[in-house]
Image (cartoon, rainbow, N blue to C red; front, side, top):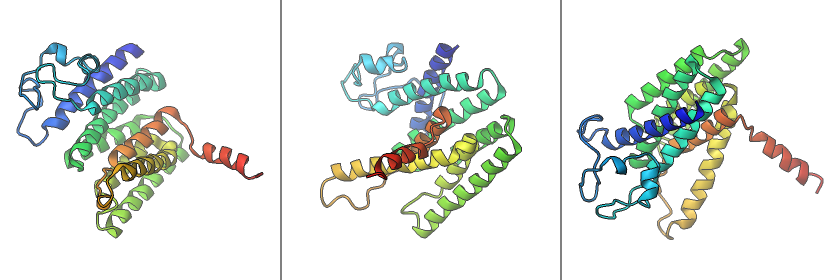
Length: 256
């Protein structure tokens, strides 16, 4: 069953890539075969096998050798792992169904945000509804349910405040409802997810600044949705508490 859900995740990630590519382009999600963006050659079945086709072609078009973005192959691997892990955590259940749907929409949001640095309103609503459905059907104590709702409101207001105070330069408006929906998915792990998101974002931001040419480091626009997704998904699927790392470091450094 883990293999089944892993393969299912890779297939859904491939479809998520198609949706992210075709949204607002006039192309139908189910109509027309995929083609190379460089030479326009229609891709055949051997070119469309999740992960393996990208590896077999070394990330290039077999017809014109143009490079294919590795983000879609990475999304296929990630969603395969997440689908399999979700089955391990929740088994065959309603919670599993809502979680898989939510993660699927989240992957589309990340892929679209990486490409266009914006989160479509429709995708945000679909993700929020699936996250709310997961929150409603997943058993938890009354205290945990109340804490989750309170955290969702606080984090949403925090991101909204960052957007307003920075006039949209530090945080996009769509990040506020996104973090609220992610909090509904993460539950009591939400604070860990938020902390991991900022850690990952800071690390990637430093790398981008270091690699950017001098004189072009100001005004670099980096979408934050991928960092939010990475941090919260790590918290949800591993239950790792980043504060334990801080405690470990403090225990070793304080005696010095």
